[in-house]
Image (cartoon, rainbow, N blue to C red; front, side, top):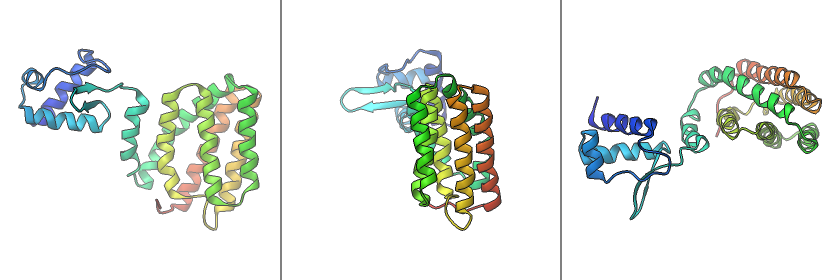
Length: 228
């Protein structure tokens, strides 16, 4: 293990153990490098790497601090990696996405309010009314985000947004098969809204899993090239 890797592992251990807590100022560079058994230059490289991951942050004139360690902040940096995945890599994530969004839909159904149901219904109606693929894609994103928001779990919302961000690069709502894809998608959305409106978590989870599986089937069939 190289010196920078040693420094990063030492920092991770200190954070994981709680020795360095969220928001805490780190010891001076000379002291911290001595604790980790690395040079100050290696420590600086490690801090830069941890900062890029959203774990640490340097404040000009103040020193180096542990970040808030909020999952939503750290996941934003993970998005940079997910956005590089090829289609086959994305498809491997769909099983995880099905589980997460099914859980979110079940929670949304359990917590459903008339306002949430009305907003989801309006989004589905807008999707039914448009034949513009870009507009449909935006409405689709709003629909899924609203369900995750209604689940009450901000980390789950961030994870789903993370996985969906790469999927949007494949533009399956466009092209010759676009109308069919959009039709299947809207039907899936309608089933999800019906379950949430009935406050039926099991039905909401089942409808969501089926909807995402349908999207996965279209991706496997069309195998579109990514376009940013």
